[in-house]
Amino acid sequence: MYQTIHEAIAVVGVYSHACFTPKKFLWKNRVHQIADITSVTDIRDGQVRARRYSCVAENNSYRLVFNRSEETWLLEEVWCE
Image (cartoon, rainbow, N blue to C red; front, side, top):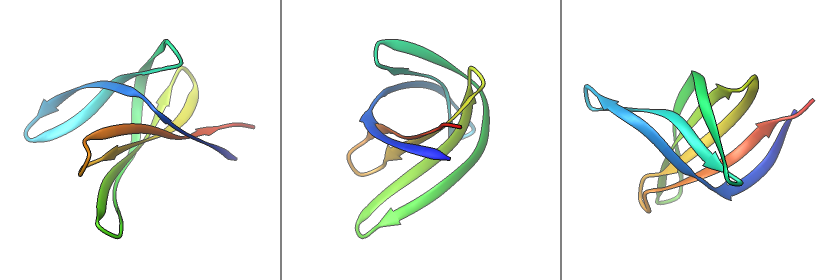
C-alpha cells in the first residue's frame, strides 16, 4: 500500500522532444536514481494543474508530483509493504 509523504523534493531530469523525464530526485539529503517511469498522469484540483509521475527507484515505487502553476515538486507517496 502507498504511504502518503507529501514533502518537497528537488528533481533532475531531461527534456526531449518537448517532454520532461525525471532521472533522479533528492529527498531527505539522499539522491534516488530513477530506474523506470511506470506512468505519467495529468491531474487537476480546481485551478491547480499538476503532473504525476509513478516511478521505480532503488527497488521502491514512488509517486512524484509536479505542480505546473507553482513549478514545485512533491514526493506524494512511497510504496510500503
